[in-house]
Image: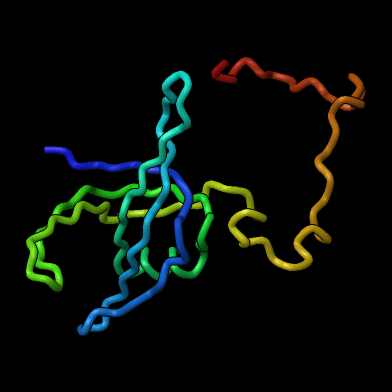
Length: 145
């Protein structure tokens, strides 16, 4: 049997880290995921997928992601039954997060540090090289290609 879910979308609200009575970290959040197709003459549809992360994944997500952040998640789909405050029986379907990854720009995720650009060096340019910048290797017969 196989139960794998992979989604990428934007958080609809800031994830909030909570703890169970036994001290285990948990966060619940919703990811807005655009559908891959658009019917002619209609607007793009979006699915809002509920997710739950536990322990280290919960700490990571609540520390580094905010409302509107792009996030990629892998996990498994789970359903559970419960009774609401009025006594009505309900079913919840949610993704149980195994791992989460950044997938937006640093500016988008807010992970860039102050002064980071001051230390970045320009990429080297190889377009101005000449044949004299290279040397021939002697005895290259043992190369695998």
